[in-house]
Length: 243
Image (tube, rainbow, N blue to C red; front, side, top):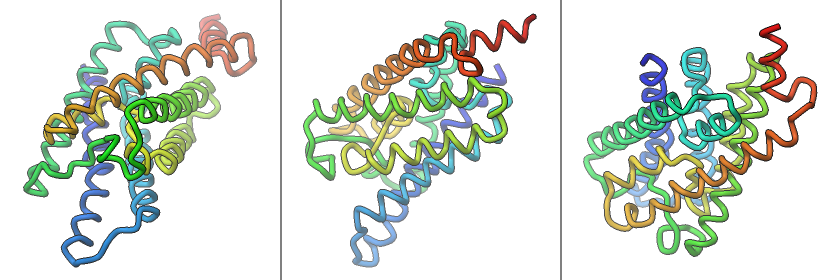
């Protein structure tokens, strides 16, 4: 139960500080009559999400592994590094954390008009279609999840894993924010969409399904390229530890 609570807290922090930082900056500059350059907001959002993961990785990583993302948990499940029971518990906890985080933003900002929801079409700075949004999210999720699987498979990388994962999340946000706002995380997208309603809720299926597809592909690709590779195959590491 403690690891599920940890996952809930981690996802809550991710949504609160990741989505909240972007909304706060836009609100502040909007109230002062200034626009926020897209390049600036992209970097702000990217680092807010990345640093949130770094903070949580070194806080709850030793309790739950700090997945705080159903796509990451799916990658671990399909890689044989997580049980089905834990996968279900993690996903439920992550979704609850995302919803609570979005609810807090509603209370803090006094509105559900802007909660950092992902989107395409008129909700995208690039005005992309649903198909392109899906493709972008699959690719971004693949890159992020394979990075997580790789760095967590190496015991010698444990001390820096949180930093690597946080920087990887920052990387995919820098590319993805202008397209979709960057999800790569169904729980992160579900919370703001549920509280915002309207078009955000209508489009959220893309940001739930695409990250899961990207995470699944990453799991199978990593299993294939890591199998038999010294220091890279988690199954091999577990067997040698048991001996």
